Every structure is written in structure tokens, then in C-alpha cells.
Amino acid sequence: MDRSVNGPIPLGRYRSFKKTKQQKRADKIEALANEIKLSRAALDNNPNPVALVAFTPEQEIPKITFNDPDPFTEFTFSNQVTAKLAIATELGVPLAKLTKEQLDFINDVLSGTLVKKIIFEQIYTFFNSPKKGKQHVK
Image (cartoon, rainbow, N blue to C red):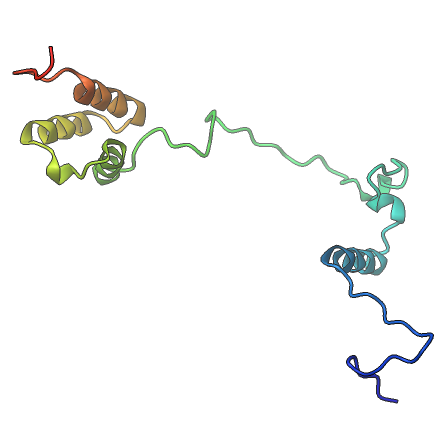
């Protein structure tokens, strides 16, 4: 007998609802648990500690601490080109549009160090200092 999905449904019979993503995922997890013979207690939110004894590792997993306080943040630029790109991004102006004096200052700073904190402190003080010469507003 051919059971087509789009055909008429006999009286007294009902189609089951389509499963949601959550229900499909729960079915997959249950099938995997049955396959590896996990008990239901191991899958619950509040598991029984006695049931999980068989699943604890025999040896302590070695732990390696980072020397760096934040291992994902780099404190120095890898080279002068990346430093110049970061400075241009921070200033919001391409370095080609800066004056020769400003470019010379940036090159002097970068020839001395590649530490981000020191570079940006010097750049901020240089570019935020009052300009020499005539002032339009007193």
C-alpha cells in the first residue's frame, strides 16, 4: 500500500505533527546514548554521582597556566607596517594625508619600540597637543 504524504487521510486517523529541531536533536542524542550504553542519569541535569563514577578519567588531566595575563591580546605589533595600519585606523586618516612633520614623528616612535601601549600614548599626546602658530579662537 502506497502511503503518500499529500493524499487524503481516512476518517479517524491523523497525521503526526512535524518534529521541531529540538525534538530531532533530542532523538539524535537519545540514539547516541543508546548506542554507547549511557544511562539516563548521565544525561540528566542533576546526575547521580554514583552513576557517573565509571565516566570519570583515571588520571588527572595536566593543566598548563599562561604566563601572559591575557593570552589572546598581543602587547606588541609584529612589524612597523601593522603598527602604521593601526595608527592610520586610530587616527581615521590615511598616513599619506599627514604632514611630513607628523610622518617623521610616527617613524621616530616606531623605530624606538613596537609596544602598543607606548606607541598609542605618544601618538595621542602628539596629535592632541595644541597646535603651534596662529590660533583662530582665543
